[in-house]
Length: 230
Image 1 (spheres, helix red, strand yellow):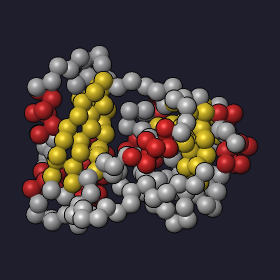
Image 2 (cartoon, one colour; image 1 turned 90 degrees about the horizontal axis):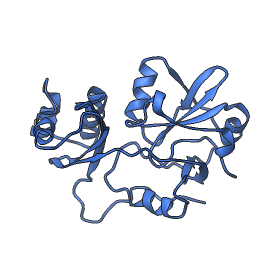
Image 3 (cartoon, helix red, strand yellow; image 1 turned 90 degrees about the vertical axis):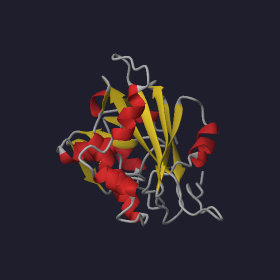
Image 4 (cartoon, one colour; image 1 turned 135 degrees about the horizontal axis):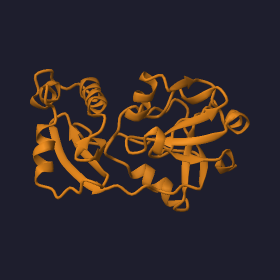
């Protein structure tokens, strides 16, 4: 199954929109600094004016004032984990969404071949491609994107870890460098590998773990190697 461009150019569009998704637990934003770093990188690499109000607000010592003001008006249960999503562009923050987090159940991973040279290094707000791909799968199945050279990347909503005898490995070239993945790399708890293919996964993996901002290592979706479908 061949994938098309996940974010094709839109005629007339001046600036794409991006999203940043946080875990809100116990009333606190988890790993806020890692999220801020990714947002700043996105803005800078997309050509944001260094003097823009939004970029400067992220450089402030209290970058989440607008978010915190929004949260004060919400009924937040202290024992509930929430998914907080910020939508933004070069022009600034355009939307804040807060929903209780519900962990998915995944039974199987379906390999999906990506076109040669494809990259998805920014977290675009346009998720229509992922939704179309997932619409072809069962609710408890996830696509596992594979490059033409055979190396694995990500699912539609997580980075991937492979548990081996030597420890946890993660693809060196994911579609998107997630904040949870980045935090684990900096802590030395996982290592990058540039040779993780489907065959290597089947032969070396003790387990496959799916992680993202709402799925830290200790709460990752954990699948047996047999979950990888042909």
